Length: 207
Image (cartoon, rainbow, N blue to C red; front, side):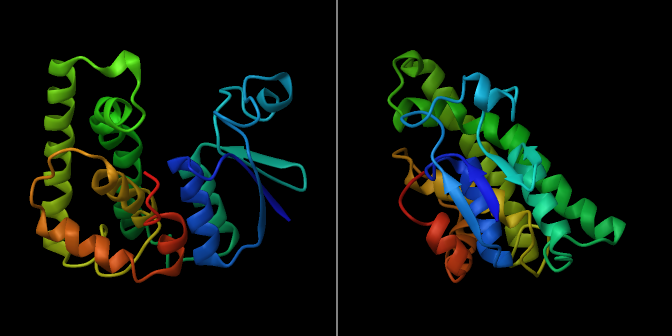
């Protein structure tokens, strides 16, 4: 059975959990990370030298990096409805997954650490204000794209890209800051909430 290493509150672990729900993949999850088993140990770092969750293991095969994991799971299941094989369609999915992991993540990092994690190292008022502006700017990019598609991030059908993007949208709504009005994002959030996997691992009140 697939083994998932990482605490359920981690946004990156939740990508894997939601993907498993979409693909009906049975798994066992083990708590690793802050507040649980220490990832900075030889045991864990033998699996992931970066000491980060999630990690998956199946019959001795180990993979880390959340977006790589969910791509692997989709390929493993031949889930072309989530991760198409046609080059242009796959590129549309990949670009939004990569954007979420890079630019989008960076945009909300400071504000999230300040307002949700209450990190003492992230309490500079000017840096927080700038972080909120950057997060809002990236949400506006998302809103414009969703307004164009009228449904999901890469087009009219749910795809693998909606898993990392949807979890980031959950983080936006669950963080206590002034939220600009983004109608397409709000509609997207409600559309995702029709999916059992998102209700279990996305819209669960845990950003």
